[in-house]
Length: 191
Image 1 (cartoon, rainbow, N blue to C red):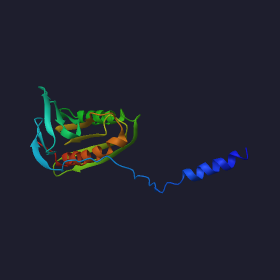
Image 2: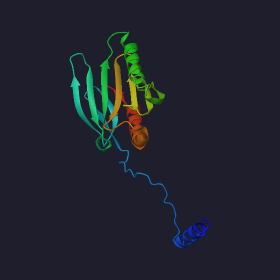
Image 3: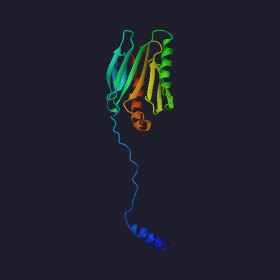
Image 4: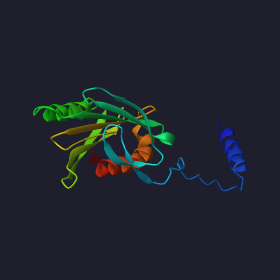
């Protein structure tokens, strides 16, 4: 055992004779190139105008005789769809029902959400009021909002991305899309 110990020590000393200095590599991050935020004012077939990013485009529209209108906006290179649900308000109690329905749609994601932040939208000049919801965590939809004039119009918007809900990986996309959604919500004008 005593002979083996010096022998092992000599092997270790001679094997460490490499003069190459090893430096750990810095962490790398995925490079994402998003298009610039440029907007054009467009008229929806549902009866309102919004400032829409030039990278997005209207896809499908479904209207019925009651004035209910569902429209999809393709998010192009961001690989997702924005769903717009427009309802004309006809009775006094429908506004509360639509607001509760919108809040229930947000609440459906409480189990997976780590946080739900809301931001009030109050634009009395254009008669637009609503709430913008940001759902953090591995949820199916990270942004939802509703807008109304409280007497005639109600619009609910929901974002769905075509990918697995991994919040950390999607965070750069979500930050980019949030700017466009807030621009849309803050530029909406009723017909």
